[in-house]
Image (cartoon, rainbow, N blue to C red; front, side):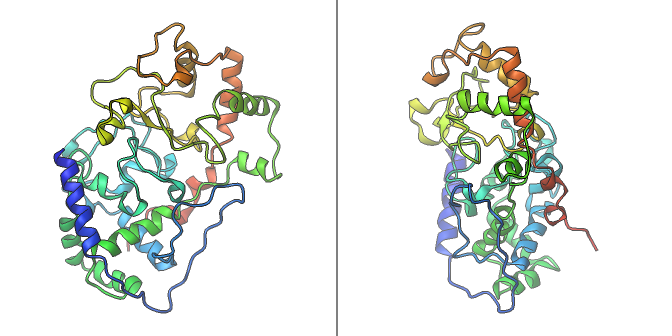
Length: 344
């Protein structure tokens, strides 16, 4: 409850200090390339005009450890480009002062399409998303006020903010706007699957069979072009005793052990899996669903759709995994536009 109160106070302060400030003229506006078969973005940059300068400021902030209590980690520490903006193949992330968290770091791409954020949906707006890891004791453990103080006393940031937002005061609004410009512009839409959808690539026989099996068994939850319906479900995992899922937010007993359906884009690049990283391979994930309700009992809170597991043979699993690999967007990993800025 203490963390919720702190976050609530920060949100109130953020809303209270909002004021309309015109950005300086001459900024280079950016546009995002989004495939026609993607859903409509939930965030459209109408109030926070996406510019090259704002994007670059957000990129600098994303990779700057100044935003953590001991200046040891940045946003990019747990959301690494080489791992499709997930953590470095670790179950849970390490925060400031060596503190160990409880959750696997979700990748931070295609965020503008999400209605809610984090495994429990505790944040409902992309602009507020960075406040959760900053305020979390086991992650960055820093207040917004302290982060702004550091930025205002920094030799470079006041001038950079003035260039983008027309003032060097560095408000909470402009700070979160800048981070949103960078994170919101990270679009993953160039996998083999995308090229197949666009008629520019062919799937192998196993990949095509895997797609058909995926659509039959998996696409109810991992729906659409983003492979997620953004809903919250319990998928038959035994509680680890540390996490309550969405119940932590709603206090509704029906939400116990429910977690957000993650996108499966880049899933082969973002292991380990589940909210606590308990499975280290796609094979282990599919084994879980195949065994659920058969070789291992489903917990009482399991979603009714999954209580009896999925009827998957070993051959089915191999083909689904072949398809899941077509969701890897290797251009995302290599795009220097998203990389940590080089220091002068």
